[in-house]
Image (cartoon, rainbow, N blue to C red; front, side, top):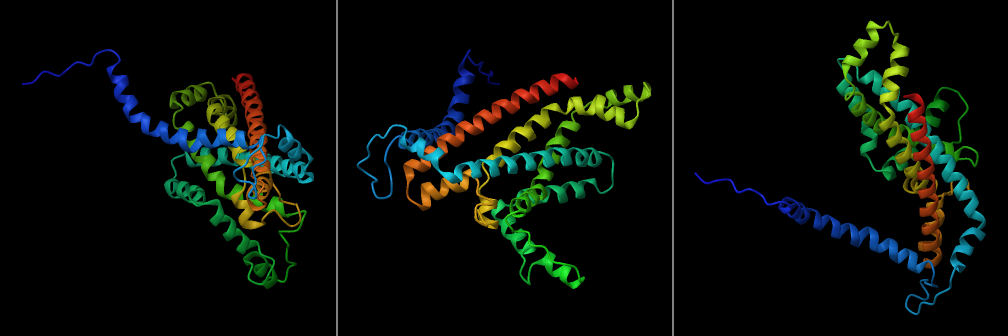
Length: 299
């Protein structure tokens, strides 16, 4: 019978490093290196007409970013989109999770149904809802309204387009929030609810005094990731409205792609990307700080 060899101090860490190294190399190549190149190109005159003989231009591209009339509109639309999506996703996901955490016969089926839209690409969801909301004869909603003798609705006017897109994303991502909440709910000890029952707490009191304070970690995750994802929105806008009508649904990512890719001004597009990174970083820091204070206040 062979004796089991004992690992020397620090030897286990070397084995872990062997497995981590490939992922780290891939991350450096496909994430860190492109980001550093983006910062570099943002200070040059790199365009599709001048891809080789680059010259340092200082802050010229950053001045162009903030001189672009569309920039303020894009930031406003991105912020509205991110706040609405995150707010509804956070608020609607929690009661869904609470209900589907109970011992219902169909809870597994209902969990799958609510989470199912999050499995699909936002591009596919966008094309699907574009068909459903279309104002033409084949649009499902307007066709149904017409059959019922009711007035049809144009979902993609300047006033409605952004909110129509937000509606589709609430439908797609609320189930994802529900799953995060469910994971947190199932980690709460039943003993806490039994103690609350002994104290004579009602269902509402148990929710606000037991459930909600212990749900702070999942609320933080959903709010922070929701805001970051909302600010980065591109694919659903591209597939549903392409930024129109007019500038009604232009977002920062749409403007960045237009300037940086479609128009061939790669240096300006890089400056857009760096500015956008800083904006999202600041928003994330502020939201994380506020969520921390909220967590302390209700506990």
